[in-house]
Each structure stands twice: as structure tokens, then as C-alpha cells.
View 1 (tube, rainbow, N blue to C red):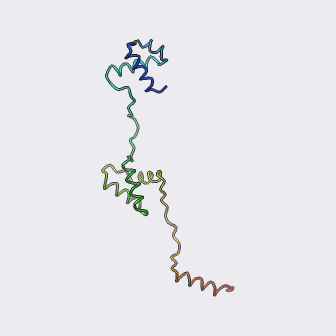
View 2 (cartoon, one colour):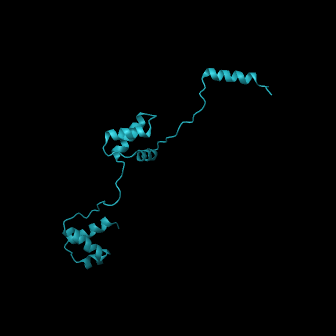
View 3 (cartoon, rainbow, N blue to C red):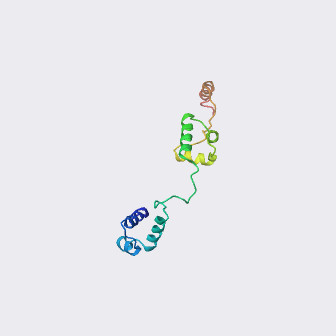
Amino acid sequence: MSQLEQRKKIKIFIDAGITSAKEISAKTGISLRTIFRIKSILREGKSITHKSVSGRPKAITYSHKKSIIRSLNSHSKISIRSVHANLSSKYTDAPSTSTVYRSTRACGFNFKQPVMGPFITPLIAKNRVEWCKDHVNYC
């Protein structure tokens, strides 16, 4: 049984007029300490739902992620720094360049440096083939 289910069960018993913690504990199997704590929360008028409090907030929000994906899809050869610059111009709380890089990797984008090969024009290629044909039995 989840914490919220326990809290709702305790609230139902209290609303039904059963205020004895021992009686509620006997019927539900929930510890007395939990029942006392929930009763004091209800007495103060607070909500029994769990509020998320601890933990570090996400650096990338949903709107940040949408903006990153939109800029990557619209420009096929855009750098991470350019994406970060676009975010910084749109949002005041833009994440760092490394965070942008990590989130793009998580979305399935890969950034690899192209392998540089020799610059061969059709003329150079033709000349190389001719040279090879001329020097077949060179040795």
C-alpha cells in the first residue's frame, strides 16, 4: 500500500468519526506514529498529498528541450555552441553548453567530426588513374 493510499484510508476513518489512533491502527495495520502524523497534518488543514521537495531541479525544461530539437532539425550542421547561443537569446535561464550536449545525446543526436580525406577533383582523379596505368610494371 502506497503512502497516499495509507493517508486516504486514515482520512476516511477520521471523517467517519473514528478518531482513536489505536482503533484505526487495528483496522488498517498502519503504525500509530503514521496515524498521529497524518492526524496532525489534517488538524493543521494541510493537504495529505505528497509534495515533491528535495532533489535538484532539472537544468533542462520541456521548453528548452523542444527548442533544442527544433534548432537541430532545422539546421542539419549546427554546432552545440550555436544551439546554446540560440537558447541563451531566447531564455534567461539557459543551461550550459555541456548540458545542451548531454540532452542532445539523450534525444538520439550524434555529433561526430567528419573524417577528412584527400580533396580529389575529377581532374586529379583522372590524372592519378593515368599515372597508375603508366606505372603498372614499374619495378
